[in-house]
Amino acid sequence: MHDNPWFVSYTVFSIAATILRLIVFRDAAIYFYLYWAGQAVYAILSLLVLYEVFESMFRHYFRLWWFKSLFPATALVAVSVAILRSASAHPTLDEKITHFVLAFEFGVRLVQGVFFVVLWFLVWLTGIRWRQYPLGISTGFGAHATFLLLASLLRSEFGTKFNFLLIYGSLAAYILALLIWLWYYSSPQPPDPERDPVPPLSREDLDHYLAAIRKIRGS
Image (cartoon, helix red, strand yellow):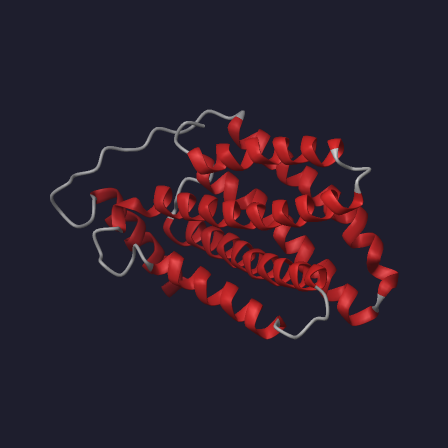
């Protein structure tokens, strides 16, 4: 896991945050601010982890000046739109905090879900090895985010009778993400083939693109 330091940081923070929440559970005021501050940090770390995945899987294309900024720009737009669409006046500081963090989390989950779909589309299209650790990280985040987005949509459309999805389903979705991560990291990482630093694309990249073109033409 030394190749994914932000994912390690996310995991360590998750353990520390859970312990701290259990310690201050009986103090409602401290727990409130600790909980929502923790959720904001979770969201920020999630974005950093996804960028780490993006950089790890597509680092050979970072020689294109626009490619390196593609993920940060997309994430910034998605999160900003989510926050701006949810912006409204609230009478108390507590409500403003929860409203902002929930909007921020929604934007991050949207990025996670879209990134998950795009990555697996690229796996199918270009023949990227699907057992890579970064892909497993994105799959875990994507599965968790997709469930929460669907549960939030059902909750907003049909009311409180779907509260159980957010309460219990959220835990089940996170456990599923943990199982996905454990499965990927328990499997041997396939070696990364040697790349020729001179041409803009390696022979393997060219073969992947040719196979993708043939696949598109045949569909």
